[in-house]
Image 1 (spheres, each protein chain N blue to C red):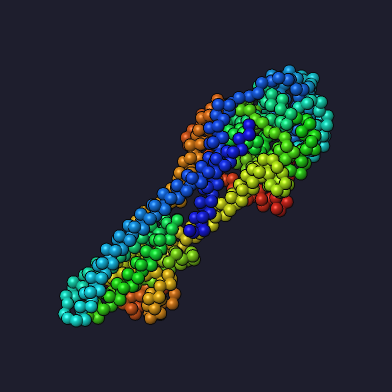
Image 2: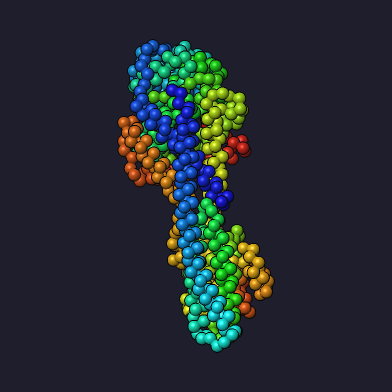
Length: 216
Length: 409
């Protein structure tokens, strides 16, 4: 009748199976991170290309249309890839490696923005820059809901405006010094905040519709 | 790792561990699960039936006791605990038909006190306690009396099942009772049966005297008595070969009240035996107390987390809908519908599937016990809804215990 060794047997078995499950889970998340890294590297390469182009602008005449097309295309890709990144982040239970990728994407988008500013200066103001500063992993329900609606609004805006705008979402609370400097430079003192053409700021629902009027 | 994820993983690990333990116990004992000890001695047995307002069922209960195939039933003591219905009149009629029936008529003082008074009058070596709304099968004694050849066995029991299986709630309880009986039998192999059910428990009189009878302050005197017996070194045994049918609640409200009472009784036991883990060198201190306490903590924390996430979700969705309509954007986009399952989701699905298979398997093993087949829908409902109500029961039980709002009858 005395079968109390079953406590240890079950414990060892549970630890073994659970550890195997966690290991497989870790592999799953690692593969997702690898996918993000791979996409990021391609984007990084394209960004370098644009950086070179924007440097050339200061030296000689350059085809503005090509530069603008490139930067809008890259921004669109970065925007779409970030949706996948968000999904993977939401399902990451074990490691925080995807968060590091998120920071890299934010930096990349900040560089993209600064390049777009250079291109704008040299090539007339042919496109609008809509920079969306949002809070990464907000704890307040109000902020979560607000950002959800802001994101959907901006997604629709991008669909309507197409290549007329370049949409750049950036997390404003990841303690990245360059992004903090940008926030400080443009007085982005609360999150979420939408900055259009470095001058027009929107942080509430009432003013969202004014973006349409501003752009047209 | 996120705090919530750590909590979920802890839950899953504990659940997985207990499931594995049960599976291992089954694998080790599958060939002897339905064995019962042979009767080498016909111990004299006194039956005790505490009754309070059971005019509708008492006749069948007494009848079923006198129909049990056992030659040494000395007496059946029906304890009328101040019933206000026609119980006493029915008992007087039954007395004419069954001369060995004795009636103990007393003012209402609760089940435990009634039993304690009757124990003093018992002449049998063994005392069978039967609830007044329960109906033991003919072979209910012959499969468990043999256990008492071991002088350290203090109590033995058999599975109970709902008498009626017509309503949906009764069908769900049938699944529950079968799963409980199966796991309880498996726990016997580690001396960890934590309760002998009220519908039928056969005690050694000496053991009952050793623990001083039933605790009148506990809401579930059967759980307390079992813990007390184990605490004092007595063994608990169970046979799967017989059944006792019992009247189960057929409506949600009485069912809920019954579960709350059980919950309060369990909590009272945890408090009463709080020193057992440190001082008691039996399975009460090593496993049962921890098992109950862990269940309580995990249940309360679990429902807390669930409510937190659930309420946050409702508020968040309300705000999103409200703001979206105001701004004129879609309430939901394709990107939000697209689900990317995480490791926790996979773990949850695997664990749920294992529990589902285990329950399904349990019902298959117990198929020869009365009750018929269970529909797939009932089984699914049992796992997805019925079991999830328990944490709520736990909260109400804890609240009622703390506020002192508790009465047996």
